[in-house]
Image 1 (cartoon, rainbow, N blue to C red):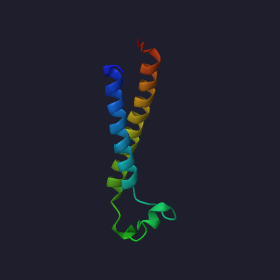
Image 2 (image 1 turned 180 degrees about the vertical axis):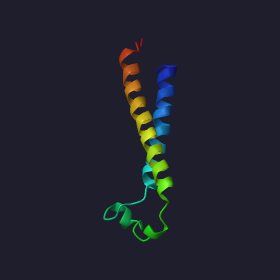
Image 3 (image 1 turned 90 degrees about the vertical axis):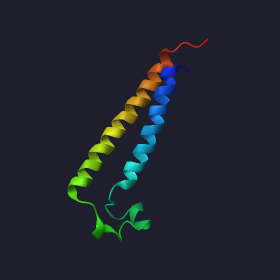
Image 4 (image 1 turned 120 degrees about the vertical axis):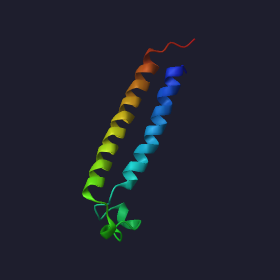
Length: 83
């Protein structure tokens, strides 16, 4: 692996962890797995609309970086010559 592949792999791992955490922070809409883990009981203590919108924007940005890292890693793997 080249240095660039190591860097992109590190970015991929970091964005994967951030994406998992940001998805788990979202407020449950009800009826799914979030209710099973107590998400329905805390619906009255939900976040404000602004915080939820900012979390949505952050999640989308991290997801785009995650997808770009996957594509870039594939391109680097394709065009890197190993001896």
